[in-house]
Image (cartoon, rainbow, N blue to C red; front, top):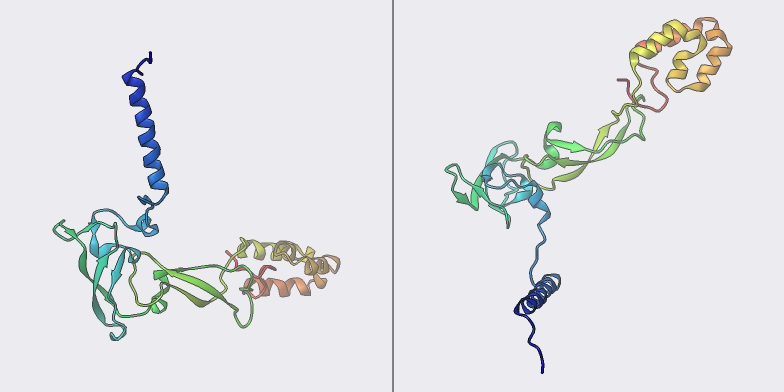
Amino acid sequence: MAVAAPPLRVLRCLCRVLLFLSQFYILSGGESTEIPPYMMKCPSNGLCSRLPADCIDCATNYSCVYGKPVTFDCTVKPSVTCVDQDFKPQRNFIINMTCRFCWQLPETDYECSNSTECMTVACPRQRYKANCTVRDHIHCLGNRTFPKMLYCNWTGGYKWSTALALSITLGGFGADRFYLGQWREGLGKLFSFGGLGIWTLIDVLLIGVGYVGPADGSLYI
């Protein structure tokens, strides 16, 4: 004679089966829980007009007059929630901006990559190709990421005041050149006693006016 399974055990088995089926449904693509990448930049229930550019889609008009104020019709992207001035939910709104492309923005409105492979102390000054990205809260026309030629402006941590002080006090022993990473010139000054003083005086002038800089091509701090 078969013994009936306790109701509690049957209930547990049923829950396990339902849990397995729900997980299988999600993994098979029946329900997507993926959050769009732009949602990380989109504040919830904020003013629609202040949303970052990645959170909205705007019907831009490239025939506007450069430098003149212009308005565009915009719509928030899916999953983004925002409100108007009266704190009412809103999806369509108008944004005010200046008619100009992203690469025409002032330098304070975008960030660019740095390069440590070019000489900052050179004549003429060297440039490098940087990749620039517009800041989130700035609106403009065209691609928000663009290339731009910039002057080399990186620093390796060398201080101009320290180099000048070493050149005045210990320049005859090549301490200034050793500090700047120019060990060949430093050895030359060391074994020639600063070029009998002439090389020492010349280096004081050259370092003082910034003509002689770090060997790695960086700027003084």
